[in-house]
Image (cartoon, one colour):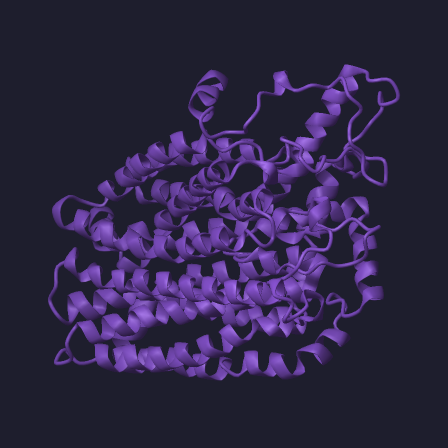
Length: 564
């Protein structure tokens, strides 16, 4: 394995060989006396060449594409699964539900482990095991085996999904990171839309087993690409470097330590915080309302995979392959949404660079205009889709366009709220994101179980109007937060609003047990979809941690980083 990894990864992996590094010179230390990266240190992932970092970014995004594609792939062949095992379509939909429940369990396991052991080996072990359990799904002798396989694959593949944002945060500075994060967030939406399209055509010509064959082939190809991802987690790199420096026995530096070594790195302390604090923060007012809103968004995303077959297959008589093609409209919509996010980020960045606005003067509520537009557009597009899809006399392109716009507006809401959570909770953002991820994944997991019955009973127009009505009520939330967000934050126990409070939060995060929770920031990714928005907190003498990178200590040039 080691030889194959080195052979495949040398063109794109870290730009140095560890054994060739010179450890005869005194190491670079930070103000606290711990090992740190020099400004031009080749071991610092943010000092790697742009082509190399782009290659690592593409590799990480490919892993995300696998995870999201696999989540919805069986939804295109549910009738075949039901027929083969002699079960109802509702029971067959559990193949999607249990996979998404794995999304809830996996990040709470793998994110803390990545903090202890680094990102690379978590990728290697989890993704390799994911491919292995896809064989169980493809050759399942009974329905129970298929369900077990789906839950395990969902749990295992959530590791790349949750840790990929951390990789991007490791290799890009806050101002450079926007493009990579926009690509990541778009893939989170494109993957689920493509799964049913591919499975639908396989259902037409083959059977449900072929959907899992495709997942195996896609996973095997991505596995080779995955081997090119080096270790990017700065605390882990510094930990290994400290061991090499101690081994070199440089006079005066025989006992040098990395920052991570001052923390309690026991599994008990790591998981103790990672498994408790998210549940406490979930019920904080801002966190709770954001979780409810994004749960509705995520639920509708997975409802669409049951709604589209009703609209285009049952009502219009299209086959299972062609009937899934309108979902490509949601792919186009996601690309449009990602482009809007990217444009907005660049606009903010240029204003900061020109000195028109100061990053330190920005409030978390400045993130919400995208959610305001997205909230209104989401409700309007849902009404549009519902009542144009209700009547076969309306050309198919009309509801398809509406579905594409739905995807655009949902992505805008998704990005805006997650960035808002990061800015509001600062060093507690890891826990807030973890809680949000669990809430929305659990809601999305339930969607396939009731969507078909709901829309058959109420009709497309009635069922869609119900969802649109809920969206209309929730559309006021970003406006309320925009006007009253600061007073709400002042009353919150977890949302620091002044320098004194921010410093108190950082002091707490310096405690051993709290070090663990930083890793939970990678819980989604769809989590910190634009971590260039992360707020700098504290002062120059206090270590700052980039929430999106799992508590990574920021490089010296990022200590006063800005929020585009």
